[in-house]
Amino acid sequence: MRSHFRVLVAAAAVAWMAVPLAAHHSFAVEYDIKKPVALAGVVTKVEWTNPHMRVYVDVTDDKGAVTTWNLEMGSPNSIVRKGWGKDDLKAGDKVNFKAYGGREILTRACMDAITLADGRSLFVGANAGTPGAPQ
Image (cartoon, rainbow, N blue to C red):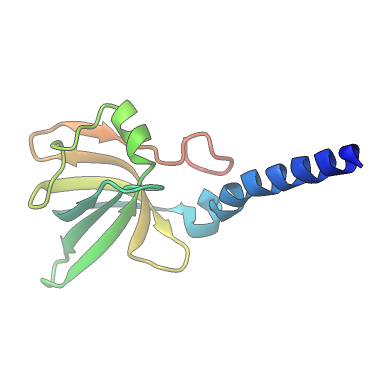
């Protein structure tokens, strides 16, 4: 009887631990490595939230139309480990960014790098190490 209980508890623990893994998405599901994006714009919002940080950038085209890009990055902890600080990027900053475009939502992208107006470049590489992701 005890061995059945232990097996049941072990199975429940494994299932409980797998739930967050199932919720996470792969790079290739949402983004297309064959859709590189390189644009300039103005940061409107920076979200230091888990599981992924997001930066929103307004990009103005040649005709004056503004498009807001939703740029996904890694977790806040991974971004801090790459040298970012909360004051490095804020609303109103003019930036150039490189990213990989969304498969279905064309104004959503996985950010690879961003260059600030003062010339500092910050590498993001949100999905580095993920199979199929840019390296």
